Image (cartoon, rainbow, N blue to C red; front, top):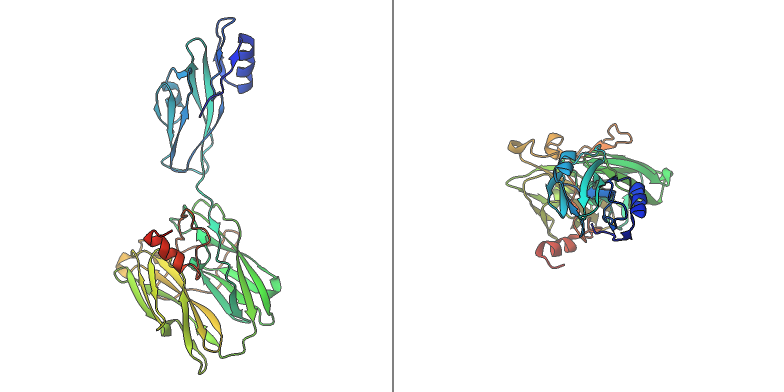
Length: 369
């Protein structure tokens, strides 16, 4: 932090120190000097990071023991600066006053700083702008990987909360540990907005995320899809189109495309084969299916560590191979605990999640953007 230098007489200096709330040791009558720039101020230590309080010449720190004894956040000190660090974060920690004794060789004073811990980045929920079609009277099951969630502190998974459906007559909405689920009303047709939020491990909620849906009257053969939970084998998995959906009729089932996995890499081929490779931790992705007649539906795959690795992450404690739980669980304003750890924030990567983003994700991995 820089300093503001002013030439002051003894009276003006006394007034300034009173305004700043600093404790001053009286200078000789008629002495003049430069008031220390920091004076009294607020200093925020970045989340799990560090910062410094810099003292501008001609002022220097006369005693490093005083600030060091004021707070364990003080990790270094010399005549020109105070080093602060917060290797841990406590959301309930109050600001602490750190006094810093200063002198310019003639005037001695104590500048006080209110040091606080800066909170981690607030979670975001910015889904792709694609409109999600769903037939009236059916379920649209959106995996967490498709909700555009980025969270800096979600090692325990975080929490997902269904907020509202607009208009309300379009249907109902709820959250599960792995999906946001929309039940389209049988008698409704038209647009619908699905509103949700996500909280990090400290309970900080994201702004509202909004999925655009379109409720349609189905005219063709119904398309039935699955939400599979698959055990990883050596960090990978292979699936086929037939495992994810089928048509109640003679129409042909088509694989439209795959979404972006949160952690791993996908190969999604036109012949209906899907190959996933990751680091062995829980992951998730969506698969868009359709019929030759134009019906569309979303399937999903949630990947969990193999049995011998159970307990390694959030998903392994609540999911088993088979199908993901879709029934409405008990939930309130706190939503439900997520079994999937969402993406961490990546610079210039906002809005790149979902079925529209495989190309951008590939470019990111090879460093082409």
